[in-house]
Length: 205
Image (cartoon, one colour):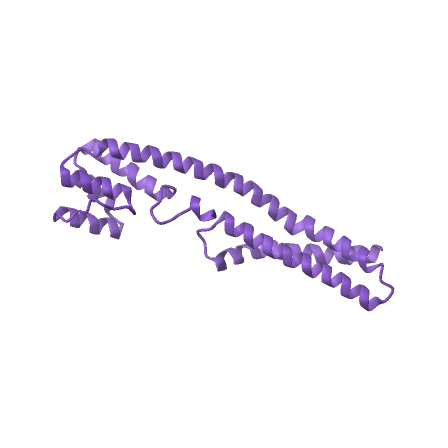
């Protein structure tokens, strides 16, 4: 579900698509030459450069469901029609989609910050307090240590899972390994909080 707003397969949410389409429209409106404008925008992009060469040779394919900008350009070149209106409409739609994506990511970022704070500090702190209180109810030291360690271990496992899920939803474009590595500092902070608070509370009780 998280990938709906960060698709990298040429969808409307890709900011690079908005940039390229905007550059093409600007160059086209200035020169009035669609093929020349597209060839200029295509420089540095192997796929677009290949398509530009194909269009020059008359091999343009108008049906390009994966890239609406290329479909517009190919149709205009094949038919001789103007592509300005279609490109303007596409730019407007991409801008709107980009604004929605930015709004969603801003809200997600705020929620992620709260998750980091909660999982790195408050949750392990409360888990350590609970572990020490519960362990103090056991008469045998071995049982107390086992109960305390088990509670803290479960709390840290939960913290690790939540941090990884939060990172994955915030950045679905990254690999699972990359998201895991980026969540490690917060998990390390969670472990440190549990260890330090557990030691301090145990010495106090």
